[in-house]
Image 1: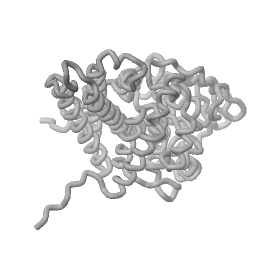
Image 2: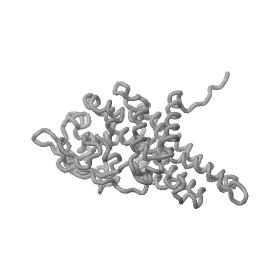
Image 3: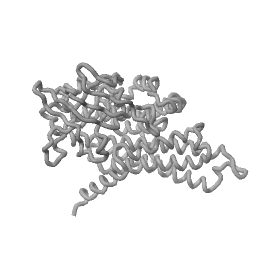
Image 4: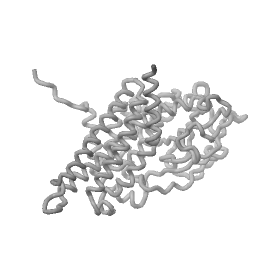
Length: 402
């Protein structure tokens, strides 16, 4: 009996990944340096992503999306991040928004937003963080109170909102019951509508201001902003899931979404690590020292061996977390492990590749310099490595309780 050929991907996954890889090679990699240098939104690349249907990958077909699973999505994210992690950031928060709608949204909300989200006509952002709270999500101060007109008035300040300016929808977690005990039972997720690209919203969206984008070390091109809510009115039907089903249920909804968000960040770590390895393999075979290509020196081969092993392990952890979630199982532990390992592997591989490049790695002439600035983001976004370890430790003890 002939052995079946081993394949990690289905035929459909192979075809999609090949398409996205080609897109990264032809459109993202040649242009990333320009957009990174001027810190400008890569509009032409995003327009092509809309045409490829990349904003609707996980949105069900009846709402105009591709209806693909999380596993295929993380494969796509890896390919995009291999090109430039800022590009995957443009899709990432949008994907979390569509996930929240698909899982918790009312039918009216799904009909209203998902078809336009699938085409990328409107894009979503996702907002938990605030200037003072960092990792302590339950310390959220932004609050909403119901007015006499039935609308909820939101006041407060949010921080680190990817796509904060150009999005049309922000899934925002705010405090609606200040007396709730435990605290997490007092939060609600609102779908805050806004005008894309406008810093001072007016009319129906008055009371929402987007200050100038935050200047960052890396992760350029995609804007990270604050959001200032000052008397912003949100209709009750824009509570995620509707007022009856969704009021004070926001914390659990957002934590569920972070689980897929962590698989997503893990995939970004794999993508940047993969690219760092490719650059190191190429440079080490072209560069000569002591009369031979540096790739023939054992010290360099050891670096390449460790990098390749880390990439492979990170990829497998990420796929496992995604496959568990697709199978309807809890994947909080596995997603935490994947995010922790893959983001650290991304940083490690980029740094090793940087060392292999020697002095040239420090020069803006070489791509590895951009990767070196981009990689640290993954150690912080969607929960720091320290937070991941807390999550993993806690979940391990829960699953193995004596």
